[in-house]
Structure formats: C-alpha cells, structure tokens
Image 1: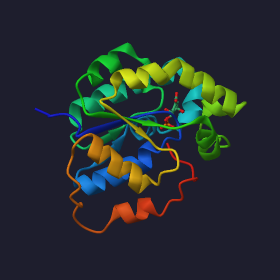
Image 2 (image 1 turned 120 degrees about the horizontal axis):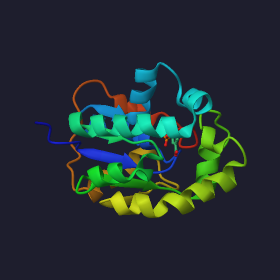
Image 3 (image 1 turned 180 degrees about the vertical axis):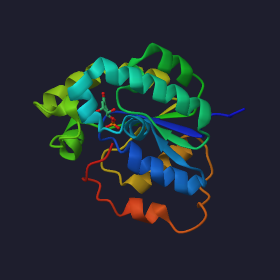
Image 4 (image 1 turned 45 degrees about the vertical axis):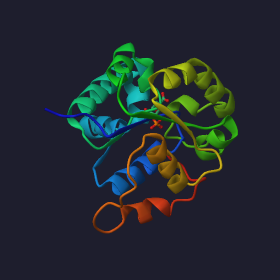
Length: 193
Ligand code: S3P
C-alpha cells in the first residue's frame, strides 16, 4: 500500500511549484510528479487546449481524477495545479498530508506568468484576474496547508530549503547528476507553474 506523497505543493500559478518541486525531489532522492503534466500526457493535449475545446468544468473533472490517482500512487514530491484545491473531495484527501502552500504577491505573479499564453485563466487582464482568483482561493490553500512558504524575492533553492525546514524533512542531497543544478539555473523571473 502506498504511504502517500512525501511533499505536496499547492499554490497559485507562477508560485514555482514545478521548479521547487523538482529541486525538492532531487534533494530528497525521490521522484517528482505534476498533475497538470499527468493530464496533458493522458489527454495528448495542452491544458490551454482542453480549456478552449472542452471548457473549464471538463478540465476540473480531469484534474480531480488526476489528483486522486497521484495521491494514491505517488510517494515522492507532488505538485498540484493552482485550481485543484477548489474541489471539496480533493481538499478532503489532502487533510493530514504534508502540504506546503507556496505563496506569492500579485506583482511577482504577474511578472512571472502574466504574459504566458499557457495560462488560459490569466489571458485577459492578468493582474485583476490573479487578484480575483486569490480572493476566491487563498483560504482554500491555507485550509489544506500544513505549512505556508513565501516565495517572493527568494530563489527556487531558498524556497526549497524553506519547505524542507518547515516540514522538518532532511536536506540530504539526492543521488546522481544534479537535476537541481539544471532546475536551479532557471532565473526566478522565468515562467513556472
Ligand atoms: C490553473 C492552474 C494551472 C492549470 C490550469 C488552471 C488554475 O496550473 O492547472 O491552467 O486554475 O489556477 P499551474 O498552477 O501549475 O500553472
């Protein structure tokens, strides 16, 4: 039986879940998984295409199933899409798990993802949309989080360290050539999930 993920990352678009998640997985010597990537792989289409072709409700259905499967199967580091916490069942499944909420302020969010066409929900007026999304979701991220880690003005490495400290996980380096180096070479301002 699976013991569940070692770390689950939640937070808004652009908070660094994928970069930080990959770094954490490397440091902990465990695999990294991302539910958006699972959906894209299963559907053979990008998230933005699913939104346009089938609508957000269909994407949320796919997301709910992807999160459920990943929580049941994955024992490494797991990053959830920014809207996954909207689902009551998902939040119930996250109860008691080592969930870290990567928080950030709106200016940093817009700087990182505002112009990214890959984010259908931020396609028009990203600053206002992001604020609205956070108003609706902030309490949900907080509800499921065991720890909250601010990402503003921090490098992905610093955020990863802060997550490990907050969750009281050891900092042992992962084996083999360093994917952390590759992930760490990304500029903090570059797009990320
Ligand atoms: C969404 C966040 C995205 C992706 C989709 C919807 C959201 O994931 O699931 O575009 O509702 O916040 P990231 O947070 O990984 O960008």
